[in-house]
Image (tube, rainbow, N blue to C red; front, top):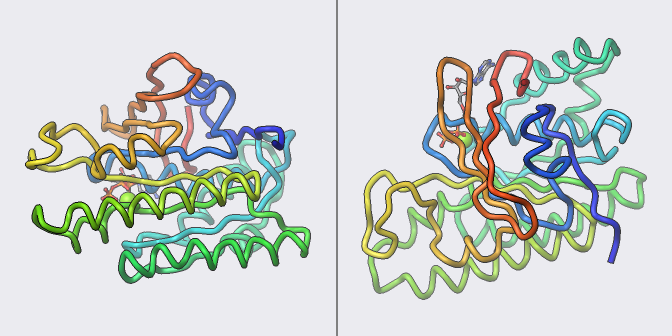
Length: 249
Ligand code: ATP
Ligand code: MG
């Protein structure tokens, strides 16, 4: 087993809550309602992971499986400029963008297949000296949720989801990479998961994700992030800000 790496979130409280940062060889789930900042955190991690270890990064590249077409290159540029400012360095946003490999997933089957493609790509990038240290799925459940409606199809959905989650875990282990998935909370109670503040995906996602983080809006640009589930860390909350420069204290 390789040594677990830790990726900085760029936020002191958030890093501390996570015992130093987002872990490799694990799935970290970001869940919360729309606008709570899940996609923002994902973009920030895609930037931070490219930094060297001295700056909390893992010196690696990124693969994003984008199911809702919410990846924004110009947001990456803003965040790289934010880090340039923070560290007094001249970082080139174009270089960061070149190390972010985005694949659109058109349905849940395609989404599952893209994890296999990600393995192939990560093997190539490893040989090129650009190891993938972060795999993002934003959002994990959108297609599954839209495609599998009604009780009759639930077992089928859970089986596919289980396969998907294990593909993601395997990716994290194979490449010593962080795996970050986003998930919405249910807008209204449903038959299987009655509590509207619980993420979608039921026990499959819940049991496979190593760390579960619940994001919620606070005043203005502030967001509260709660560590809900972790194998070794105490529950806790961290306050962060989503600003033009990115995720900050
Ligand atoms: P969804 O469930 O709809 O995908 P989400 O949790 O992914 O929601 P985000 O897209 O991460 O939500 O958050 C959107 C919010 O992030 C915006 O409402 C705004 O507050 C903030 N935000 C986005 N871009 C910027 C920016 N360039 N500068 C400052 N804040 C921004
Ligand atoms: Mg989003």
